[in-house]
View 1: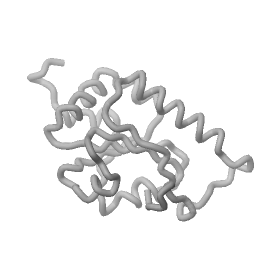
View 2: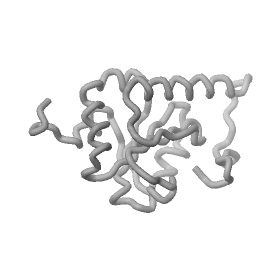
View 3: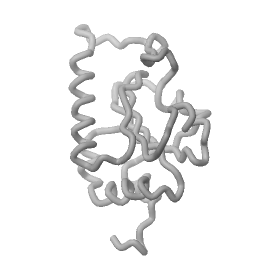
Length: 150
């Protein structure tokens, strides 16, 4: 892939990223049913480091798909309310959710091996914390450590 032919927006289709915004974020990501691990890619137009991730994602598409994430994306330069919601100081940022709960975030693109390791750690932690009876804690009962919403 040459620099002249690189289209940063291709990654959205390649990874099946669904666009979200501040108005529909909770319904699409936090409150939607399912136990899938959801990764929200927060980026900005013409952001150099965001484009580094996008280029890497195109080169390592299958490795990222193999992580089994449900992907979402939002341009926080265009939707500043969403950026403020997560107190962003830089992009790209990846925020991870499962079953109505924010599990963590990765600020900056650490590279594929570190990203894979972080996802593996989150999966292991989630498995260790799962209720033995398989029940799900209601999303309304889950708060971030500081008491703020996801």
